[in-house]
Image (cartoon, rainbow, N blue to C red):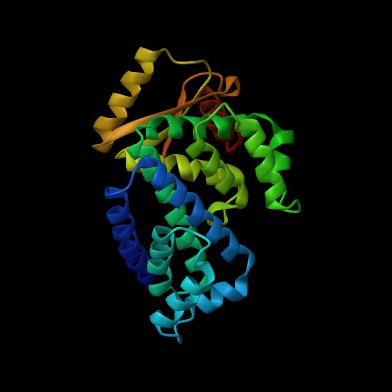
Length: 274
């Protein structure tokens, strides 16, 4: 959702979701979220339907009528109403309708986790799962292989996380495998971690060190970064002996690389330029 028109359209959808969440139980929110994501998956597979539902030449009532006719009796009324808000809005391209539907489902999952008091745990589980994939090239290649049907890769994710992660974590990990927002699996998981942190009004700091930090050191680092950025910071720690020492911190587009490896590389470049 890159255009200003699409961002404005999704803001209205967000308001509709907030109104629904305010009066729903965590279980009802979770069920609706899964249904929204199921419909988003249909839109992903059916480009002609996407184009019809996003066609600006058709009146919004016509587009929402088409949607309601397709979904009537197949999903809950709240699900239809939320998706109708997406379809009634204006989008710059059919692909942005799909992005909005996916984002709506993800936001609903996160809302359900927040309502259930599990949002921080979901954020951490998504991060840890991303680290598992990063640390296992074979697994990463399998779950990221777009030549394999997404449903088969999703089944693998379910088997890996069954009994080890919360339901919301599994659902979001499945979205990453399906290519959330057109991203790779790793990038999708990273974005989902960031969205979970944003919902907790936190910034994510990706920190790489050569050896584990103590809990006190991690807390001091978080407090220092919070002071720099003016908001709470969720520290996501990666231990990589290859950095040799020091610390690398990435927050959004900001990178602070004080690792020994970085200093050695800079020194080598300086010497080579003489």
